[in-house]
Each structure stands twice: as C-alpha cells, then as structure tokens.
Length: 263
Ligand SMILES: Nc1nc2c(ncn2[C@@H]2O[C@H](COP(=O)(O)OP(=O)(O)OP(=O)(O)O)[C@@H](O)[C@H]2O)c(=O)[nH]1
Ligand SMILES: [Mg+2]
Image (cartoon, rainbow, N blue to C red; front, top):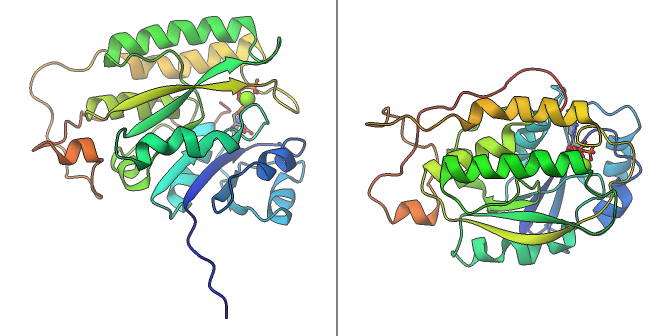
C-alpha cells in the first residue's frame, strides 16, 4: 500500500457557489499542498466539482464566511494553514512566497495586501470601505496594515489558540485583532487582485459592503484598559513570538458577530 505523504500546507478555500472559478483555483494550488474546499451550502455543484478535481471537501451547513473558514481550519492537519477566496480573484500559487516568513519563523501571520489588476476587480465603494476599515485596524491594533485581505498564512496550532468566535464576515478581522492582542508579528505583502469569476456576493454591492462593515464594527472597539481578564491557557502552543515571552498577551473575548447570514 502506498502512503500519501502529509501535505506541506493546507489551503482553506471557503466556497459558496463557485463552480465557475473552482477549476482554475484548484489548478493553481502549489504541488504538495492540500486544497481544503469548505462547501457552504452551494447549489451549483461546487462540492462535486471540487471533489472530482481532487480537493478535500468539507461540508459546513452553517452559512457565513467565518463558519466556512473555521470549519476549514478545524479540518486542517498540516502545520501551515493558508486561506484563499475561491472566486478566482486571488492566486493560490503565490502562497508559498506569502507564507515563507511564517515558515522561516520571521512572522506569525502574513496577510496579502490586495492590488487590483484590472478596473472592476475592486469596486470603488468596497475600496473606500476597506480604507476606512484599515485605518481603524491601525488605530485599534497599532499594526501598520492597509488591507484586511483574505489571502493569509499562519501556523495551525497558533490559529487555533486564538479561539476565534465570529462566524460571519468579522472572522478575518477578529483574527487580526486577536493576533495583535497576543503580540503576534503580523506582516503584509502585496498580492494581485483580479476580477472574481461568477456572481459577486458581497463587496460587489453597496448593500453587501455596508453589511460587512456593520458586522465588523463591534470588533474594533478599543481594547479594555487595565489588567487583562484571566484566560484559560491556550489548548495548543502559541506562535514563536509568544513562546519567547513569559505570558502570551491574550485579551478577553471580543464582541463579535455570530449566527446566520452571508459575508
Ligand atoms: N459571501 C459568502 N461567501 C462565502 C460564504 N461561505 C463561503 N464563502 C466564500 O468566501 C469567499 C469570499 O466571498 P466573496 O463572495 O468572494 O466575498 P467578497 O470577495 O467580499 O465579494 P465578491 O467577490 O464581490 O462577492 C468566496 O470564495 C465565497 O465562495 C458565505 O456564507 N457567504
Ligand atoms: Mg470575492
């Protein structure tokens, strides 16, 4: 019997009706890396297409971008976990270089800063909302970030130790805020952002963008001053930066958004 070698990394791909984009996205998963497609109740055959193309498919019935991302994280087994949208707007082939600082021990979380490659890749209203969001992230966390991009890389056990609770569009923001509070080294690197394939669900409309910003706002309230609330020790080892400290700076649980609804 031949044993399949363990994947170098797991790439979590949240997927809601992305039949048009899946073949191109999966074709660009780096060799030796595992695609974990989290099907979030698609009705266009996405799960079947992904499985047919060799992806590991996870079914997450609870709607929401965060629900899909977190189900993927829980299903991941590799030391390194990356996240990538499944709509063709981001290139998974860039993940090895994006994740290199994490693998080298120079960063705990790397985020792709989206740089649009074409008119229409990133509608003006979505860019403006993102600019304001980034400004508030900088103010809240002190991290010099310019985008809350969905292409990201970190170690699996470290991500789990953040104990993220948001299951909607606040998930990526909660990840960054908690990482900052825990003293993670967070880096940003430019990545091309192409027009998505298939129908836009969120930021393509004013309404979706407004909803996403509203979902995220509670996560950006100032960090409580004074002594930190005692926390249970993390289930798994914190990232390298925290191991160097005597006690990881983990904040109290953040107010967030939970429940049903699309990103
Ligand atoms: N919107 C949404 N996306 C989900 C959900 N579950 C999984 N996804 C996937 O999450 C990724 C990001 O969602 P997108 O719809 O691309 O969100 P966006 O990039 O902000 O906006 P558009 O590309 O304009 O739709 C895609 O791969 C979706 O298929 C969900 O419940 N809602
Ligand atoms: Mg998209």
